[in-house]
Amino acid sequence: MKKRIEKDVFGEINIPKDKMWGTQTQRSLENFPIGIEKIPRELINAYALIKKAAAQANKEVGKLNEEKANAIQTVCDQIIAGEWTEEFPLSVWQTGSGTQTNMNINEVISQIAKQNLQCGNLHPNDDVNMGQSTNDTFPTAIHIAGAIKINNQLLPVLEKFKNTLEVLERRYEHTIKLGRTHLQDATPITFGQEVSGWREMIQQNINMIQQSLPTLFSLPLGGTAVGTGLNTHPDFPKKTISYISKWTALPFQESSNKFHGLTSRDAVMNSHGALQTLASNTMKIANDIRWLASGPRGGFSEINIPANEPGSSIMPGKINPTQAEALTMVCVQVMGNNTTISVAASQGNFELNAYMPIIAYNFLQSIRLLTDSLDSFNERCLTGLKANTEKMLKNVKQSLSLATALTPHIGYEKASIIAQKADHEKLSLREAAIQSKLITEEEFDKYIDLSRMV
Image 1 (cartoon, one colour):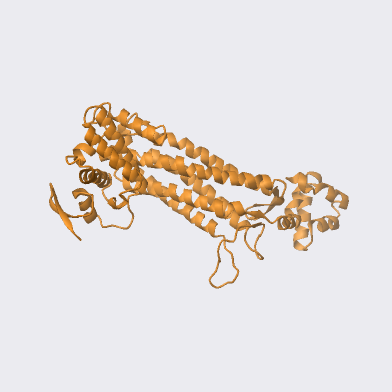
Image 2 (spheres, one colour; image 1 turned 135 degrees about the vertical axis):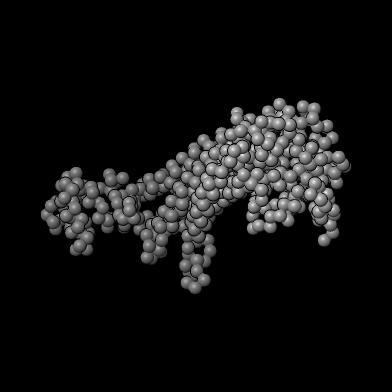
């Protein structure tokens, strides 16, 4: 591999000739050969957006000439469009501020501008990073990346998911089935009512996630190193953020307290808390569905789900609830990510939180995984879900919990005697009631009306 030699304050270093990064990126690659986890692409794009907006703001306040500003913006547009992806190779496991990622962006923009746009005097620190510090741009990039992914990807998927549940709710609004509490038989419910509980969970999750977005819309850009805004033009933050807001169509605004914005990651923790709640609810929904689909001969078998692929390498014809399994594994990962983010967010020592790359990685991973898995579950499982109405009705009719409907007429104790007699003597509830002589046949048929019980 051909190399080029570059020099910085630490001396000379060899860099692959075909790469656009500079000395700080190369030193990070050599100093942190840890794991395979890389800085997420969404964060890189958010960073490019910041650099583009910063160049425009610095040009307008007279700090950056038009040639340099235009060159920075051109390269940033290319990065956002998906070009130069191999130029951002840095590990998550680097400096806790993310400085090397900021400099990776700065160096790549500078080198591309020099090589492709003939902007030979564009400096990564003095020009591309003008008016900025990693300490304010990295948390800003986290907020931008997270807000964009939630608003543009996760929330639309949740709306589709909810709409599918609404269709199922209407379709089965009169389909009576057995309710269950403590994994034991309970009084009847319609399948539509059961699905309505799932649908309301998703609606509440949509509300919670939307309510968490305003904290992400607050950007600490302009605080530079410690929150004081040293080396930044007074108009820089407002101008830069106004362009970010315009280009993303999201209401980003300047943080009211940049000291808080640099040292605290509570906005991410708040938003991820809503994601963890979503994970908890969707795990419950997926588990309900795979329980109800269990069988087909030895389980509940009250619903049928799509058969997408063979379920066993040894048992012919076996079909497994694989979409539910994939979704619930994602939910477990998100719950783990929440713990990581919570611990990392607690470590804002003095004027800076130094766990930002891992916070960014886990936050964006959670959004990505939830988006992808919920979309897949909706398309490959939920839309094809069908109720086994005959099995549902059979389970209801043989349930001892129907004795609950007798209690207003004969009392709890007598209804219990009938239920226990049916269970011990393997009788139907109707047979046990009549044999007990605690209620007449006509009264039983009158009181046990499934349509009135739901």
